[in-house]
Image (tube, rainbow over all chains, first blue to last red; front, side):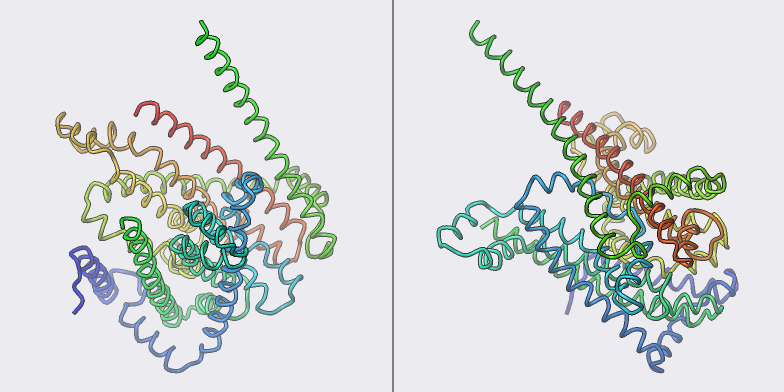
Length: 256
Length: 270
């Protein structure tokens, strides 16, 4: 049996309570029924969407695009972080760029990406990639900087090559920080891809939400939103748990 | 005597190295700008002007835009929405952050919820905000606040939790009420962290406001961007992107300086 702490129990209570309050408020007509439907109806709509499978293609498109963007951003961002750690001069120069990266709505580059990649899923993948790569690189850099010098010296004493040092020493030693980067990459890729679909694209999960909104199709819109929230919430919880464990293991190791 | 000359010499080297660092920093900025321009020209040449116009075309377009009185109506609309959203995010975020920092249990309960909200693609929830606030500036403001407030809350909360216990004892010794305690001890002590959160919150509030204007809006820079995207007016897109990027970078650098300044003052006192 899993034992939950007091904060976790209170949190569950808070969420259940607010959902119940919303349910009562919308059933009793305190909230405008045109703008908000009761959570129970949202749940029914979400189940219908899942069982009828009419959005299966859009869900698949969004997931596959996100997966491609995540894989690319993790690999390139990790290598970029290593490179920046190697070249402190370059790092100092690009630092302001890395810091203001997230202030520009990356979606504005979508039309150019269409010209470059053509009218397919690649512009969206590029959007997710561009939006998340900086988080990956910065966190990798952060982790690599904390590798104890003695470990790198050991690798050199053992005459390990660059690739083996990276895979066997640098990556494991900076793993918790690199994982934080991976977590943010996943979150940011989804934000960029679903945002891009919502604003600009003609297919995918985000697009279907915008389409339902434009058609005043509230049950579908809220059903899709609920599915998205549950999906992102679950994903986030899993990532958070793994991250927590990695940091704890590191702390324990350092204590030993 | 000997030691005095030694100190003067030492002072001189310190001053010299500081000067060198300043020169170095300016050189770094120049290199960054030149490097980005070089990359831009190379990309334009490679991809073609229909995908990415050259920097000079973009700057020409930007100059033309800045001379157009119509453009300032959009800037004003976005500026108003952004300023209101930022004010609400900073005041609200700091207040909630202090509250959650002081009440440990409340903080423990809310922190994961806030992080989860932070990671949701909020743009897909924009229709709800539109339905609640209606079309217009209030929906944009609300969307900007939702984006910007969370990092400010999280940073403030962490800062208040990590306040040196002696300050908290001071509050108790002086029997300060909730307001004086917040105004005179908690906020000043947490300010460096709040500024760090503000830097992220600033960027995200701008992003949120612009995103709000890109969907179902008739005015503002976001709307202008959306029109440019629909018409495939690449030079307008680039001109606006450069302007926004310059503004965001400028603000970010200023706040970083403020942050460093505050931290320095902190160390001196500590």
